[in-house]
Image 1: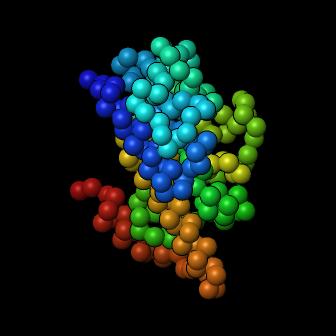
Image 2: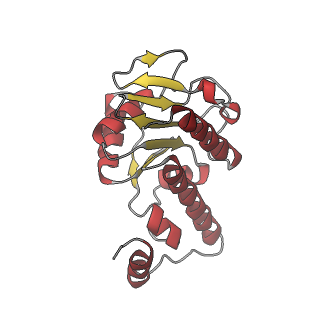
Image 3: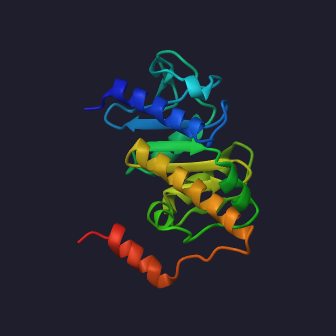
Length: 210
């Protein structure tokens, strides 16, 4: 059974975490969860300080895009609905603007195997060229998220999907951590990525199940 109050509270917690860790500004980022049984999503509102969103502020939107009750959903609502349509296996979406990750990936550098956490949580991030909101940008994003659980729109931000809000959030946090490590490493001549054997060892230990 979908516990609406619980998920409203969880969305607020995730937005607070994003803001506190510098992964969004007070005006950026959005988060949602879906109730497929009841055909609606809960999503952050537009125009409110993301640090101070309350459970009552979260907007309920039908899968047809119509608001149920009160509130104005995030301007990225169309992206969330499109992603849920393509990824019927996911429950949550988190969109953030991690500045270091956006900077290095927009510049052409995509981390691949910087840390064990990155390998486990991110691994096959896909970068998508920036496009103004519309059919082109939606298609690029949804196509990327058919192949990966995390995609970065250059010059903008990252969309992460998951079976839970925390899983989707954690991918973004790990991505930004790895990106900061890359920048710090380059200041001293570069940082080696893990070898194929090390990658296999990490996957065998933390990802593959017996």
